[in-house]
Image (cartoon, rainbow, N blue to C red; front, side, top):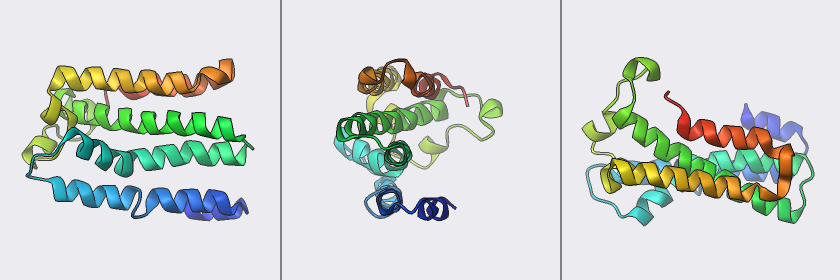
Length: 168
């Protein structure tokens, strides 16, 4: 449905943005890298690349598609891209943390699945405290990217805080 909605805009830039985010350079490629990393140690750079593709590309794309539809200029598109990339990464770090620290009842799914499948995660690689620190720093980076937008970007700021403060 996302491709259908993008195609109805008549903007080839929006369709291309979504296609790239969903394809081999985005979610599909990230999922493949994630599956290939199961059961082996990865570096922080590898983990970041997995999640930049798997989760980050779609979140960045959602922000960029809105910016393109809204007529953002080049500087705004760069800033919003940085926001989306950092938001996507923070979302994934928070998701990894919730798999360790979350309440299964609130989450609506079992916790500990990542460890059971020997998945590459931020808590497994960095430890709980360092992963939490990285999530906060990544959200700060996202918020910094919104500095030029003033109060008009308050909903984006609230979304960033929700990403790392959520308990589900």
